[in-house]
Image 1 (cartoon, rainbow, N blue to C red):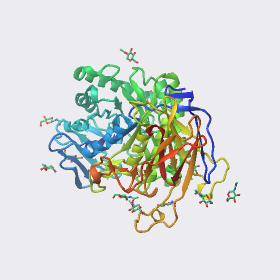
Image 2: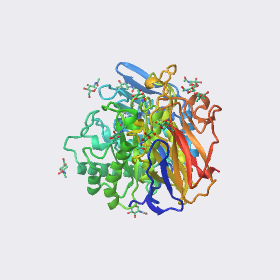
Image 3: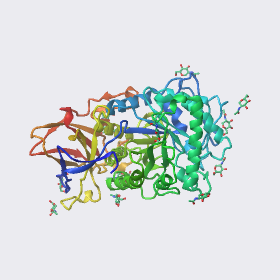
Image 4: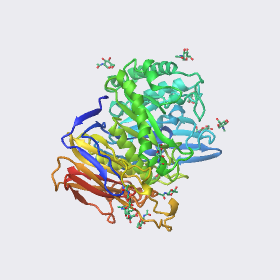
Length: 567
Ligand SMILES: *[C@@H]1O[C@H](CO)[C@@H](O)[C@H](O)[C@H]1NC(C)=O
Ligand SMILES: *[C@@H]1O[C@H](CO)[C@@H](O)[C@H](O)[C@H]1NC(C)=O
Ligand SMILES: *[C@@H]1O[C@H](CO)[C@@H](O)[C@H](O)[C@H]1NC(C)=O
Ligand SMILES: *[C@@H]1O[C@H](CO)[C@@H](O)[C@H](O)[C@H]1NC(C)=O
Ligand SMILES: *[C@@H]1O[C@H](CO)[C@@H](O)[C@H](O)[C@H]1NC(C)=O
Ligand SMILES: *[C@@H]1O[C@H](CO)[C@@H](O)[C@H](O)[C@H]1NC(C)=O
Ligand SMILES: *[C@@H]1O[C@H](CO)[C@@H](O)[C@H](O)[C@H]1NC(C)=O
Ligand SMILES: *[C@@H]1O[C@H](CO)[C@@H](O)[C@H](O)[C@H]1NC(C)=O
Ligand SMILES: *[C@@H]1O[C@H](CO)[C@@H](O)[C@H](O)[C@H]1NC(C)=O
Ligand SMILES: *[C@@H]1O[C@H](CO)[C@@H](O)[C@H](O)[C@H]1NC(C)=O
Ligand SMILES: *[C@@H]1O[C@H](CO)[C@@H](O)[C@H](O)[C@H]1NC(C)=O
Ligand SMILES: *[C@@H]1O[C@H](CO)[C@@H](O)[C@H](O)[C@H]1NC(C)=O
């Protein structure tokens, strides 16, 4: 049993069933719960996109992307911090008690070469053969690091370049960026370092291999130890107050998956943590790929079974490592729906927001301490688009509303830590309708001091409000949206006890806009991402316990929180 999983005899247990049209499965009174860390709702920002998300302090700066022969000034004048991003981070911090931790990394971290003479933040060249979505040749200048100073009360992970991109300046880059990053972040803004993104793909990468095909775990471990010791040497000279166990350490190994060229358990056996500097076991996960065959919203993302098996693979991998490293906690340092930046119409839809809730809460329930949702400028799966580019306009995107629902369900973890249980809502042979076949709903319970405090229900049935999900607002789907009733046995709760009902609302799983959490919009065009209560959405609904159970009706493609603590 890992330290963040608890098996408890709870003072109030919960059983669950769906009473309309679907069968039910109840859970036993003793359930395994995971305890999320503070800042459970966190982000990973693509290294090359970070200046777009954060903005800068200096009055004039540029990020240039050279695409083919066309030069795009992605940010020509951002004399100010990106306030929109900061507002969205504040909203989450307000709900969960800590502003999201930001890991700055991803594929482009291993392309970034430091040029002390570069007068702009970042000069990136996109080679569409390698990737149409981000530059694969990158120089960063000293002003890149100013982006670390624009968001108050945010802690960062800076990802150092390990891959090298076949550039002879790689080692010099490491030493120079270590000095500038430690000076910029200082111990108050650092949430551990990272050396290398997805090195398990270095020998096989679709964007171009950077290690020989016989690269193995012991090669990786020697490189990792040599470079992290070199970073420590730089810190000893430049930032000597950042060497204590509380301030110096790494997220590692940041592997892309559990079955690639390198295996995490083997790196442990080969001595990755020889120096005792790995603070979190960080893994990456994607449910599938943007162009993988057969990917659909219902079958791939709004599919609880699939989400579980994707996460369970990490739980199994980690179990072997945790056995030898007591106290170590697993996090997902980079994750999202579909790799290759997401699929249009799927990863940016409300259905993906519902997937995000299920994915994050399932992670919490199995002891994954923190989840960094990945994003970059123009990425389809991003929670928000930070600036307007020629490819996408600035705005809050559907997945952000999933982040909000997760944060609201977990509550302020600094004041009231919660433990999260996954509730089994199965089809156990009752009266299911045809359309229910293969769809599993999802539900979670949050416990404070072992007492049931909130329940999350996610109705995972896709409902298109535009005809065939085509997004044409003038052509509505004639099929009506069904509502299911969910019934939770709440042992130990007196009849009449009330719960406030908060809904994550959208017109359908195909919606990409018009989304609200408990009647609140966080859209850019209203108050630059600050919460705005809308008047056309019902709120303040309550349900109460009757005969030891509580019941709530949930339309297809909606998530609902029952909050017992709010009344
Ligand atoms: C349950 O299924 C029946 C028959 O298919 C249908 O008439 C009814 O509307 C359904 N109820 C709900 C709540 O979806
Ligand atoms: C930058 O933008 C601000 C506000 O939009 C404007 O006042 C300022 O003149 C701009 N500066 C430059 C150098 O373009
Ligand atoms: C930076 O510019 C200075 C002065 O032009 C030059 O001497 C130096 O070699 C340059 N450094 C790099 C890394 O290009
Ligand atoms: C940006 O990089 C390209 C090559 O990738 C180079 O041609 C161009 O001069 C660079 N621009 C600046 C401002 O350094
Ligand atoms: C783009 O990348 C491909 C694949 O690595 C390479 O063959 C090609 O030369 C690159 N194009 C440019 C303009 O660098
Ligand atoms: C890993 O590769 C290195 C160098 O390529 C080699 O010396 C070593 O024997 C390999 N280790 C294993 C366990 O295969
Ligand atoms: C710091 O951590 C290392 C490795 O876990 C351990 O050996 C050492 O005793 C710790 N030092 C302090 C001062 O706690
Ligand atoms: C959900 O995913 C599982 C596992 O990948 C798959 O077997 C099942 O068919 C999927 N369900 C739907 C409705 O596509
Ligand atoms: C399910 O409900 C339908 C319609 O009410 C009924 O005809 C059927 O016999 C029921 N099936 C079972 C397994 O209860
Ligand atoms: C919704 O629309 C998509 C096409 O965008 C289609 O693939 C899917 O089957 C539709 N879902 C439902 C439940 O009708
Ligand atoms: C959602 O549906 C309502 C009611 O039909 C409509 O007024 C509204 O414009 C729709 N929102 C979006 C974003 O399509
Ligand atoms: C509520 O109002 C907002 C903004 O006026 C609009 O975007 C949204 O579609 C409306 N929602 C519904 C359900 O009508």
